[in-house]
Image: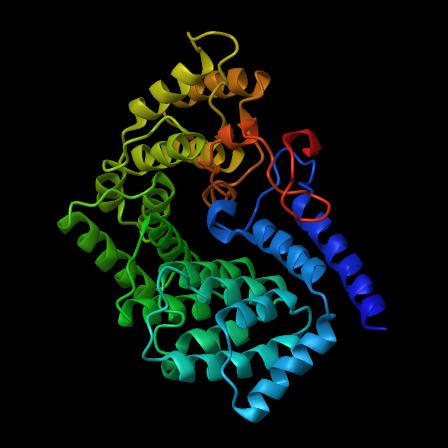
Length: 374
């Protein structure tokens, strides 16, 4: 019976993995999460769950029972047992049991260095997969767990989960908790921080955004373009046009779609109208090779420009440029918000695809010969 239960569980995991791994065929799909797969690693997590279940000799239910007996008898829990348990969880009830094991494991190892391995990201990925954001928040903020979740990746994945669900207040609480715990902020952290503040769009979130920007500037840091663009867009929302221009001046790569659209709004609101039209005119009359992708502009941004130039001497020139851009397919339906929230491209190189396969895709066992590579 245990084997049959394990087989059914494998089937469920495979279906879930296929949904995760199969990309939707939509050209302009807007993804509401902000982190790349390199950080989220949800696909890798699914694969490890499949491998763990496949390699389990006694069945999931029997394994869970053995762990429960260890809890009752106060026997020592091994790192490998906790790791396997986390990868076998499939339901909220499983996660509740895993929480008991986490607290017990932490109590046994609170004076022991975990080394390079961090359980926190694995737990948060599990909560991400099962939509258990409140469980993840409670665990991350629980001071009794010490350093168990005190790493940037755990906080970032949790904030990304909350962002996807539109729970921006909770995401801000997690950000402030991360700050209070003195967890290091990286580029992706600032993307999430500014995105959350931008979505909240209130006085307190603007103060937080400004304070973070001041700190970044004082420390001489350079942030990802997406982070700066969120900050610029937020400043524009608050009618802080000079500040928006200053923030934009710190962006190094300004040739991207998002950067160009944000640049138009910065110039427009700072009354640099000739510069706005010059930028659009250059895009409408490209001089590069035909295979180079032409710049694209948001219909929403163009509508804002049109409204600003209405009944001015520049209106006719704008209309001519707009018509040319429209006819060449350079006006897109995405809003500025869509462009800001679009998931950045992964930086992972594909050179690993050239390496010979050492593990079987079917059995997850080491291959005995390169001839057996699938």
